[in-house]
Length: 170
Image (cartoon, rainbow, N blue to C red; front, side, top):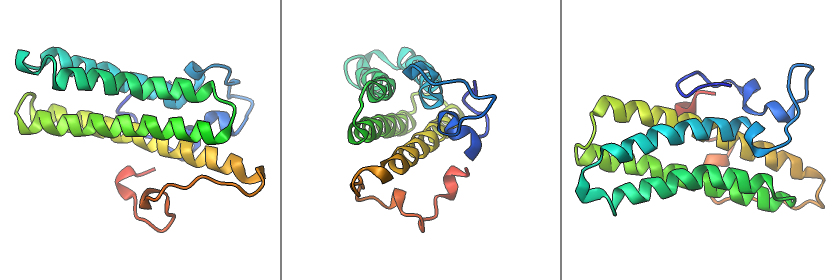
């Protein structure tokens, strides 16, 4: 299992999408690499909550906890769905929760709750999770090609092939 901070490469993004003699069969959401990496990201976010000032107990701390749990919950729920549109929808919900967490880290920067270097590192880890989620969405969309021409698209340049997403450096 890859840990937060390790480089992401295209081959490891969807271990379950390209069966090989070394890849194990995905049978639960816990086997999904995207879930495992998101779970690893959730842990330090809970650590952030524990270090916030008391004034943030019912505000920012609560928001971080909910978004961190939603990040992995939506991946798990996606795995339990059989319709490809539902799978994409819940994966996108997970991505939205991740974006909330990244913005919460901006609040921590603005309010000087944590050292800037720590926040930068956490945000880099978050962007790695985002890479995996985006790759997983692409994989799910590729699986839709045999479904009567239907597809799901989000009005976002993040999925436009011509957009420069070099900050993700896959």
